[in-house]
Length: 336
Ligand SMILES: [Zn+2]
Image (tube, rainbow, N blue to C red; front, side):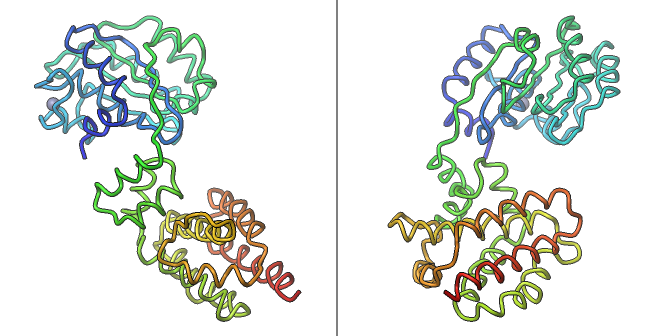
């Protein structure tokens, strides 16, 4: 789906403001796009950059011309993108950017644009250099910043920018976006429950063996019901090779744990008479509920261990720890 369609349906007010300013050629030299996690800050930053540089703006970006495509694939010379959350912007980058952007534009449009996505993650020295850059804007240079936490952005930076506040994605909207990407309704509801934004949800769906991992989660529940004492064997023989094996990205392990957490929350939901996320597994979830396991402790334990995934190189250790917890605490309470 094109960014413009997504933004017009989810951010109608900001889009109207922008379109008016584009048609009146009243653009700003610095934008700050603010939205909570889950709102399309990155999509908006790209859309503004493309609108400023597009060969056939109408008045926003056409998203079809060569320039729009080159911005998307990062090959347009007068455009730079930095992701603050990935530590992609160092002080040297700001110095290089200032140098490059003080030269005349290379592309014929004559405008240079840079995006710093999630500026709150940039360190102090980067911010100070950027601030100077924004305070003394070179001609025809446009800065676009995004943030998911505007309270962590320097007030002096905010005061230099036109601030665009985005609306949050509602769960139903996110689910509809996923279904528009040909994802089934059950999978869309699982992904919506597990992720708060479209990018993360699509990334998990497209860049892992999502279906296989979902089946593995269902098998884990089935194993709990059918042979609780063999859960550890199941972890070693089935789970670890599937999600932590050689060449497997950490993303697979994370998705497995996210979905396992979501499926266990369903056990609690069933007890409370709420609608399930794993809609097709109601009978299995009921059987897990009847085991009287300390499900809330299991969920907390999964979340705590999942946080270690970022630091621990060997993700199989994380799975191991969780299953040992299942075995010990679970078996203890189970015996009562
Ligand atoms: Zn275009």
